[in-house]
Length: 503
Image (tube, rainbow, N blue to C red; front, side):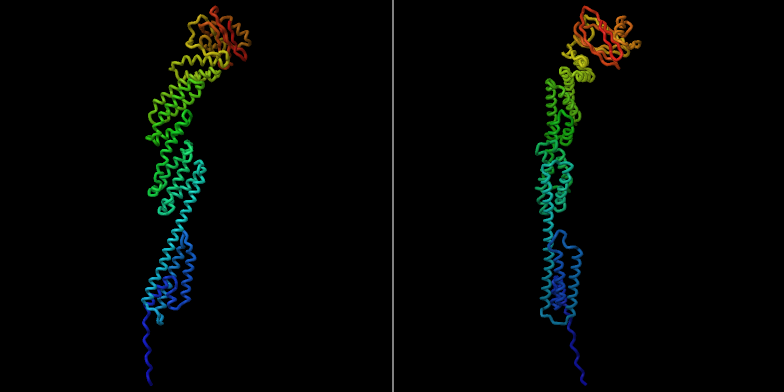
């Protein structure tokens, strides 16, 4: 029996077509499976790619989730490996030559690569739009705050806008939004400093100080975005401190802005004007002491004195000038109060002058007016005229007036008339309170030698007296003294009142 012929040897593996199928499947379009006539698998590859596009498009800031990208990449690798496997074990002839198919696969790799680049561009554009939206929102926030006071209510909103600007400058320096930052920052500075533009210099100090801190909140490379704005507040702040401080000269609080000016901007033109401004203010208030309201000038000069004392640097000359002006002013104020009938105030002012300026050439005169004012507070007739000048003292007069203390406790007698003065008598420890004035007068007529006493020699004329004893209501009276008589004045205490007798 004849032997059957041997079967033909198997065809060699289609290795070139395996590479081609793998490359074609890497395009994500399933073309490797289509080459092998596996349409269902090709359709599945296209469906996976379509699903990816649905997730990725339109491109947004966040992009495609990482898990989706990893899953799709694994799927492409699996389809490429599966296509290569099928092509290796497929004995069927292929209509296309392997080099052509491989070249087509290489060319089609540009599809996912190009799509990836296009997607990144789209995503970058989405980021740019998002950054511009953030910038526009910050700009609107600043515009809404324009012309509003920079205070505790508005400051957080201003700082919110500033954080957006800072983040753009530091984290997205190459973005289109960052290119717009100079205009946005200029608008921010202008809005914050609106009180300065309006001439409200005291209100402008706080916002301008805030603007000086802005450069320090930016990282060094991003700080360049500020440009000239970095030093923009300096001159304006110096001007505001000067204007705010000089506007308050003569009132409490002027030293704070001026001290800050001299410390923060010692070499500025504004700092150089502080001294002349103080001198002018002192001269103006000193001239006002000759006017109708010297007391106001004194208060303002005292405030100027506190200002000159608080300022840094050598202000001793200014302080001394102010102190001399205050001394003149206190005296002028007391005299003016006396002339206006404010006798209690005049007495307090001039008594304070005597105590504060014991070496003053006007001390004795101030003491006389203070005595007359204290008497006039109880007896207004004593304040019709200022007491005569150069009249202090007991001696030199033709009238002898003996005053005696017939009551318990020390006695002080104030008098004014042709001469003005005071006399103090010691306590009369043996004296008692009289039931009636008649009994006190009787004690006085029996003689005053056994009581504390002194004799005054006064010019003749009309006098006003004020008797002061601790625990007893002050008593005022008047008398006309003649050189033809000698007078004895006894002061004693009756029940509920002070007694006064002239004999």
